[in-house]
Length: 77
Image (tube, rainbow, N blue to C red):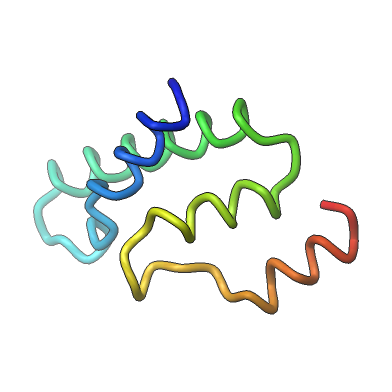
């Protein structure tokens, strides 16, 4: 998956799937998230890089905190 495809997948992912009462919606969302996380690991060596990329493309309210990312950077992760 290219970075462009990955950005698109993050942007259009159902970030609220875990709140669904519909088992199919939950399974699809979980599968899609796993696919996105696997692709992030292939594209970026460090977790901090993966989370920064995620934050660039995820909608507001679905971001990792800057403090957490900074802690990862400080610990070379």
